[in-house]
Image 1 (cartoon, rainbow, N blue to C red):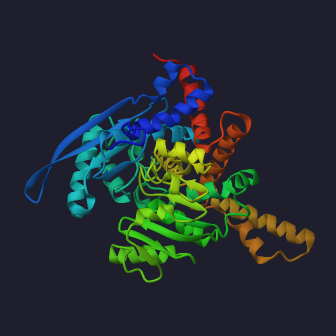
Image 2 (image 1 turned 135 degrees about the vertical axis):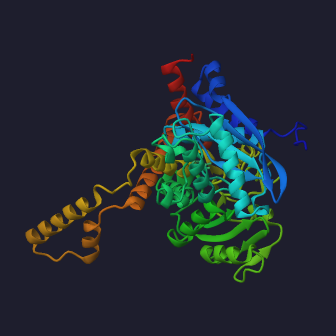
Length: 475
Ligand code: GLU
């Protein structure tokens, strides 16, 4: 397929590199350093046989390390039929920038297995996952110190638990074995709040955006997040948690959700939990009673709304539909949903875009907390929670005896409650997303050459990464 100018569309990796190039230019980085940062360090391809129902099937998977200026290299493993080497390398590059933007001290990596997970039984998936993990471990592409996968499209806690167990069997002497992968079930070394983290992070980003009057006005909005009409593409783990929070806590109207089998539209606002329950029961959105079903789901990206959240997959907004997008703000919850060519069109049209490498970094942020928890071998809050409660109690009695005033019950509750692990994780996530927004905004405010959030985010990332190359040198 060719684009309007007659040249072939850019690959995913080229698209990411072109976006990064805008920042290299702004920062005037030495071309050698720029090339070193952009280059993918190593990609492993494995082909391995697994016996399924008495027959041998050969599976192909990749694990790509984009950068190792910080270790471990970090990033999810996806199971999908669209996976290929270019996709995995592009996603690994995004992980490098993502970690740098949110100050997570990891390099960037990504993995993928070419498979349709819906076609295999649970037992088969376990066999395939354990075998894939063994390949990665044996070849040095999976360990708590060097390369730590996490869930991504088509994978979840279940796969992460199998991977951790496989590593433990191969390396029982490694006291930190449970840090070899994140996104594990809480009962197997996971952390509370990881499953919701990416979606929740997206919402924390949006709340922070709406705290800055100049950003709100530049995007052509008035008022706060409440009441804004939002369209969400993809009701997977990320889209579901983001949409649910926006509807339930921020009083947004989620007017449409787009799924593989069409879209659900209701201008009065959709009930996200009800739709999720319906999907789990019926394996489709078709027939959901309280909304209009539109068979051509993708056309709904162009429907009138205030905010569009693509939370499905890459390459959804291209030169073919970029002119027709009505949203004033696009929040990229998926990785790479807007191609470089479409990004150029949207930038010219003045559409504000909060970019993937920042917006969906909540997942890796909480993965970082999980990894630290695994290395510390203790749950966050375990030492101080009761102590904090006791201090809160003392403070309450002191205030009460000094003022002789009754303290409202809700204040008493707040003061006396010690933070548990989920409170701490959410607090750390919120802080991370807010601080990163402020860093990105500071770049835009201080540099005339930067007037979009994507370039500013890459400037934040590349400034930090290049410093590590310049300080340590190349050897
Ligand atoms: N797969 C997620 C991402 O793309 C999470 C990565 C991680 O937690 O390491 O950001």
